[in-house]
Length: 303
Image (tube, rainbow, N blue to C red; front, side, top):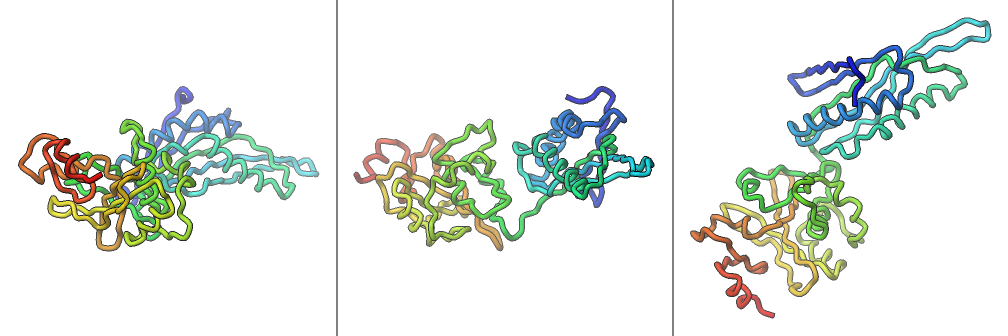
């Protein structure tokens, strides 16, 4: 919901790199919480548009407040102050809430008055958000899915933009499926389950050679890792555990400097086009050989 007659001004600078969205104010805007609450939906809408363009962004909000106070001599003084939220990297707006924004603003206002200055808020003078594309460098292992793989719709590529836990998120994507309509590539679906996995002694990003250590510490999960080159699946690690509750395949993407795990939700789709067969392909999860019939695959896999 927005106040009637409000307008937004969008500014773009630095060749479109930085975006600023400014929100109109009125003299009657005297409550920070109500003002931010009435604009939060538009803030999320604007950030969503930026995310669609850049995948991930860094953003923050600022607010200018007018204050006044009466001195011991009876003089009326006026001043203004600006408060800013902490810059945050996001790939979705699930955590962008009015409460979160206001809490940071009110903490700043409280600190502003903590010296016994007795300033009284008069009105909101300015409110705006600023954002810029976030390009991961050190501290994250995210790699965008190559188009030839993306069109197969065979993997879920978790956008871990703040850490190097793509292996864990990909495993959890298998254990806790998310409907495609709810954007399963977002980390917030899986963060609540991180403590379900035993990662004692493991470091991240997890080297492929340490996948067996993970399996040893998580006895109901088997994990195999493959890479994809020239329309072929190349096994990097094939789990020896064949009777565990959860059998998971991860596809490892890589570029010049980074490696990134993704969850393979459909092996058949991933290898589609590798054979002349136009129908569904049944893949051995251990040797990755293709079969045309489930019955033949069942006979191929030993008990």
